[in-house]
Length: 97
Image (cartoon, rainbow, N blue to C red; front, side, top):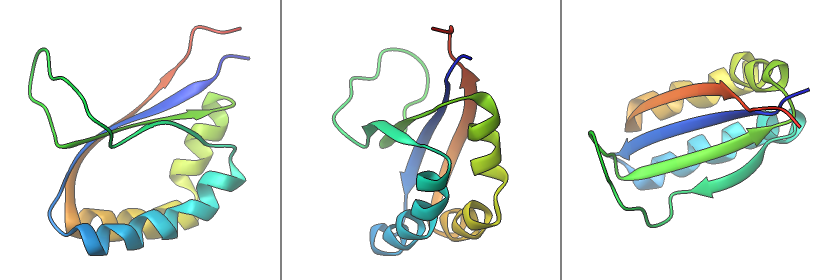
Protein backbone atom coordinates (compact mmCIF):
# COMPACT_ATOMS: atom_id res chain seq x y z
CA UNK A 1 0.00 0.00 0.00
CA UNK A 2 1.48 3.41 -0.94
CA UNK A 3 2.25 5.94 1.74
CA UNK A 4 0.63 9.37 1.69
CA UNK A 5 1.97 12.81 2.49
CA UNK A 6 0.57 16.01 3.87
CA UNK A 7 2.29 18.96 2.24
CA UNK A 8 1.67 22.28 3.97
CA UNK A 9 2.82 25.79 3.15
CA UNK A 10 2.13 28.16 6.04
CA UNK A 11 2.57 31.80 7.04
CA UNK A 12 2.26 32.15 10.82
CA UNK A 13 1.02 35.46 12.25
CA UNK A 14 1.18 34.46 15.95
CA UNK A 15 4.07 32.02 16.61
CA UNK A 16 3.24 31.64 20.31
CA UNK A 17 -0.37 30.63 19.66
CA UNK A 18 0.76 28.46 16.72
CA UNK A 19 2.46 26.24 19.30
CA UNK A 20 -1.02 25.56 20.72
CA UNK A 21 -1.99 24.25 17.29
CA UNK A 22 1.08 22.00 17.21
CA UNK A 23 0.43 20.53 20.65
CA UNK A 24 -3.30 20.10 20.00
CA UNK A 25 -2.62 18.30 16.70
CA UNK A 26 0.03 15.97 18.18
CA UNK A 27 -2.33 13.24 19.49
CA UNK A 28 -4.01 12.86 16.09
CA UNK A 29 -0.65 12.77 14.35
CA UNK A 30 0.66 10.09 16.71
CA UNK A 31 -2.52 8.00 16.48
CA UNK A 32 -2.38 7.93 12.69
CA UNK A 33 1.31 7.12 12.32
CA UNK A 34 2.57 10.54 11.19
CA UNK A 35 6.28 10.96 10.56
CA UNK A 36 7.56 14.50 10.02
CA UNK A 37 9.99 14.65 7.09
CA UNK A 38 10.31 18.43 6.92
CA UNK A 39 9.12 20.90 9.51
CA UNK A 40 9.80 24.56 8.96
CA UNK A 41 13.49 24.35 8.10
CA UNK A 42 15.47 26.39 5.59
CA UNK A 43 14.24 26.28 2.00
CA UNK A 44 15.01 27.77 -1.37
CA UNK A 45 11.98 28.98 -3.35
CA UNK A 46 12.38 28.12 -7.03
CA UNK A 47 9.01 28.85 -8.66
CA UNK A 48 5.63 30.19 -7.63
CA UNK A 49 4.50 31.83 -4.41
CA UNK A 50 6.43 30.75 -1.29
CA UNK A 51 5.28 30.80 2.32
CA UNK A 52 7.55 31.10 5.34
CA UNK A 53 6.97 27.60 6.76
CA UNK A 54 6.88 24.33 4.83
CA UNK A 55 5.96 20.96 6.31
CA UNK A 56 5.94 17.45 4.84
CA UNK A 57 4.37 14.67 6.92
CA UNK A 58 4.43 11.00 5.91
CA UNK A 59 1.55 8.65 6.75
CA UNK A 60 1.39 4.87 6.31
CA UNK A 61 -1.47 5.23 3.79
CA UNK A 62 -3.92 7.64 2.21
CA UNK A 63 -6.61 6.28 4.55
CA UNK A 64 -4.51 7.20 7.61
CA UNK A 65 -3.65 10.63 6.22
CA UNK A 66 -7.31 11.41 5.55
CA UNK A 67 -8.44 9.92 8.87
CA UNK A 68 -5.96 12.12 10.70
CA UNK A 69 -7.12 15.27 8.91
CA UNK A 70 -10.78 14.45 9.50
CA UNK A 71 -10.35 13.38 13.15
CA UNK A 72 -11.97 15.41 15.91
CA UNK A 73 -8.54 16.00 17.44
CA UNK A 74 -7.09 17.49 14.27
CA UNK A 75 -10.19 19.54 13.52
CA UNK A 76 -9.84 21.14 16.98
CA UNK A 77 -6.21 21.93 16.15
CA UNK A 78 -7.20 23.26 12.72
CA UNK A 79 -9.61 25.71 14.36
CA UNK A 80 -6.63 27.15 16.27
CA UNK A 81 -4.37 27.16 13.20
CA UNK A 82 -6.89 29.07 11.13
CA UNK A 83 -6.87 31.96 13.63
CA UNK A 84 -3.07 32.37 13.66
CA UNK A 85 -1.91 31.44 10.17
CA UNK A 86 -2.68 31.22 6.47
CA UNK A 87 -1.97 27.92 4.77
CA UNK A 88 -2.33 25.63 1.82
CA UNK A 89 -2.45 21.94 2.74
CA UNK A 90 -2.80 19.03 0.38
CA UNK A 91 -2.58 15.29 0.75
CA UNK A 92 -0.84 13.28 -1.96
CA UNK A 93 -0.45 9.55 -2.37
CA UNK A 94 3.09 8.23 -2.83
CA UNK A 95 4.33 6.01 -5.63
CA UNK A 96 4.05 2.77 -3.70
CA UNK A 97 6.65 0.41 -2.33
